[in-house]
Image (cartoon, rainbow, N blue to C red; front, side, top):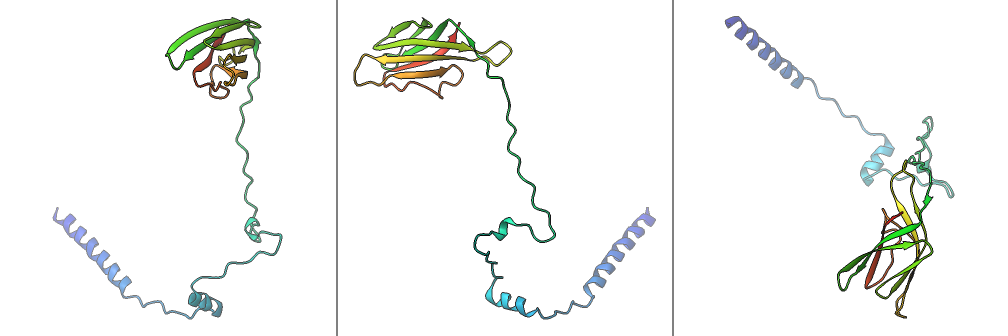
Length: 178
């Protein structure tokens, strides 16, 4: 045990001796800077190179260096855009004032009313079973009030915010197609 203690003390003293020899090395003498660097040091920073008219030096690689790699666009997912026709549209209607809801089932080509709205279903399509489930309906909505605007377009079941009817009283959403 004592021999281990003496060996550890010897290693510590050797380390201290190495530190003291490093501290005793002569300092590196300073040499004067080249004239251009002296000028930069006095002015505060090196000048920024100006590019000639019509070219940009920042976009060009330095001489002897390869140009930076081109950034590839993100990969896109190619899904088939298959839709199957359906015969009926199932809508969920909401009266925002009275908090009344109704589920409307309309045959393609037919119409239904909800409050002052007349809703005509022009088409309804669904995704095949081997693709993510979704439904879309082409609707024509008119309001019996003359100051209200209607709606004419596609509504998607899974993405209702893409195309929605803007109405102060009523809200319509596609619940599915059958």
